[in-house]
Length: 631
Image (tube, rainbow, N blue to C red):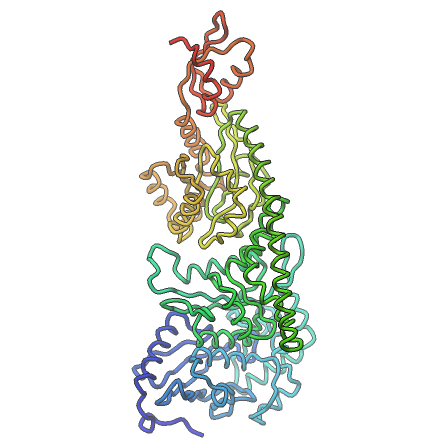
């Protein structure tokens, strides 16, 4: 078998040209990991550079794939060969031809060059060899556990077969000799690999060891999305942080540009096939979509991916994180409500096993069970709402008691992981969990802070916000978020070192608008200035902005300026009063000195005549006494 020459190949059809140009653009934006397209003027023949994956026989090696496209691509499969020297593998002949089913009988027009590459990667990384096509190489793979043996090379210390960070790199001799050397070295370490690979996926999460599931991320860049929103790559990067927070091990990601999502599978059929190849190549257990999927899309994708692969979306992932981190009964109630409301329209997929048992009769049983289950879930939702309403009333009573002692309330708001908890800990000596993780804080924590003038305010740390925050979560956490709407002052904490700081600010402001907080005074705090690329430039820009303070909650830099700014803001919210406090109301006089700025106190026959600036809420309590005020 030989590859067709340029002269013998028929020219590409218009459909093939359009398809390849589209694939080429997608490749340039999001190439498969380990593959690089060598740009030429020949659209009909692609040359692709393949880097041997670490932990395989081919670590440190570089190969070339030659892909020749037929006239009627993608209706016909392309011819794909390795340019010799080819990898030493039972499914690859010495002339470079590859025995891979998707290049022959299993080819589908929905497949792409990217999905071919991922399948080749899967073949080269496979732990077993079911059939041998190259007998000369098959003898080296006699025990069907090559990958497990080769993975043991990862454990080698630097200087003993490891170079440039690539495990098991061997550089001497021909390619065949190098491969055989790796096999022998791997055989010597065969006993240790299985344990080390599995143990490496155990991580300590929330004080307990958990096994990290392998996850693959999927996004869609919708045409027409405004420039003022998160880009698809930035959004997927944030999704990866969320996955890590949830205890998942992200092994890859991909996205597709679409005018609008596919109503059946959210993404196109070609991208579905590519992801299916990635699932087999990387042993993916969970596929996470960056946008909320409909119940139908969820079912169709799980059916297509098959096996035990779990499909979820950003909303389900965030709910899972909240469920893991809910430390109080109140938070647990609110998370449970959000999860149940999310699950209600998706219950059908939980009962499909009943439909498979015995045909139509059992299908009816499944449908009845779904309705029963939905009624149960609705009853549970109603009960949770009653409990949460009780929590809201309790919180309101607590706030009313707190307002009776008129100490100003300052709430920290901001994007998740902006440093709110670190700031609270720094100012108050509190011991609130402050991790470099998304959603480290769910429950509001309030502490007293004393200013230089001797006055106090209450500082409250609140749950962080995020783009695409599930509406069910906002609704469920309204009891907690009401703390924000009752504040005297909002301090919007921004991670100014983050490249998407402006977009994060917009996301927070959007949620605050939903909570009707526009009338509450606000102070902007640019945190993590010590992590910024140019701290001095950031500080200079902050001075030009109104109500902006630069700090580092971690190091303490700028905290004096912050406290002074809060003090001035709270002073601006005070009103001038002159009131005659009766002698039998001595506790009021003490409170005025405690929460206000007293200019003069004069004792007269009927009591103490006080002239002071006091908080507006407290001024209302003094209304009867202000009526007897002496001008």
